[in-house]
Amino acid sequence: MIDLKVTQGRETFLDLVIAGRRLDETLRQTVRETAQEYQARLKADLRAAKSGKLYGARAGRRTFRRVTRKTTVFGRQASYRTVAAVARNTRAYRASAPGQAPAVFTGAELRAVKLKFPAKEKGYGAKVFADRGVAFYRHFLEFGTRDRVQRRGAGGKAVNRFVGRIEPRPVFSPLQAQLEAEMLRRVGRAADLFAAFRG
Image 1 (cartoon, rainbow, N blue to C red):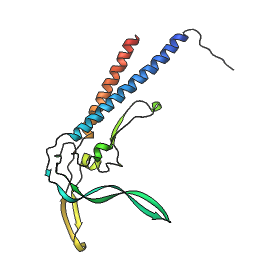
Image 2: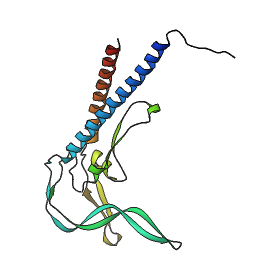
Image 3: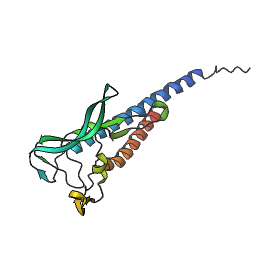
Image 4: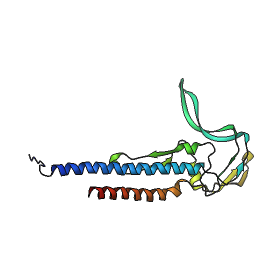
């Protein structure tokens, strides 16, 4: 058996441990604050005025949303979530133009914007994202879609008619590079200040 003890320089060693923990917390706080700022900025971009097409109010317009359905399975009541068309009255609103952040109509994407931080043992970082369970269409808006073609018409007759496409309306992509650069700058600055203070 080998028994090692640190007697000389023990206070210095403990000071380094405490300083390391303080630096760790400072860096985590910097990352957290930066991510929260960008989450607020992303929501502000979604809420900002848009310059796309103006849609008037409509009664009984079909919109698609996640709904909870109830059913009976083996004599027991169960519920499941699905996407369904819902008829509802809609207010007038202005859509976003291609290249702008999506317009807020139902508020689903706005509510879906979340923040996630890794566990302490997995390092530093932050994730600003839209929960796909709430805003399942977010990729269509962010990256656009290909041409949509109606293959068959009434009675199964071949139509092959162009019915449109969604042009990209990015909100996450433009902020991604800015968030990474800003986070690196702030974390580096926090580490330099801490080193200068300790020196």
